[in-house]
Image (cartoon, rainbow, N blue to C red; front, side, top):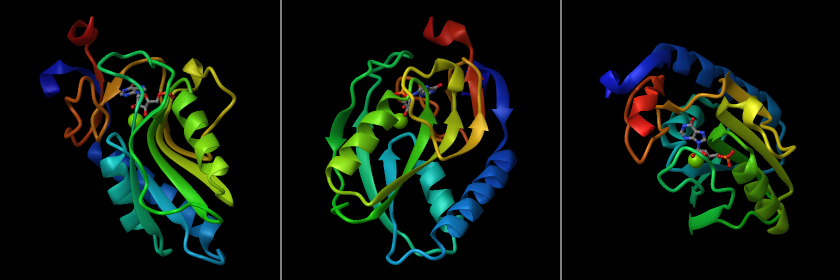
Length: 180
Ligand code: IMP
Ligand code: MG
């Protein structure tokens, strides 16, 4: 897998450091919460980020999972969100924390936020591993981001290209000959 990378952007150690920062931010934000927030793992891309993040928190959170697909096998967003598997919990009246891998055009996040509010969520906060602000096509933004990246396709630590590279422990830029 490493041979397919143009460069390594963030090492496992750097990721751990940033995840700790995100956990501290969430702990502060929800320290006085009346009821337990619902942490939503947006599968599959945020699987490792989610697991590391919730375990770095000191605030109790309920865990839930949702599989959303927007990309097919390409590197450009199809712009529609498709719920492949839904949450088990009701979000009605809850403080919800969306834990996402990356915000690119922002369509997925915008669609997901709209959905959660339409189901009665009291509040929705979004924590993302990586943000690609230069590619935004909506006015939606993460409330907390660990890394900001340029207009390049990144893989690793959950992020894939055609379902591959998710299990790389670091985050890197894929050589463009791989997806050209
Ligand atoms: P958006 O709807 O355009 O914001 O796309 C968000 C989704 O596209 C993310 O949840 C990822 O699954 C995928 N995505 C966007 N950019 C990348 C990337 O650089 N590497 C891997 N997946 C990406
Ligand atoms: Mg995703």
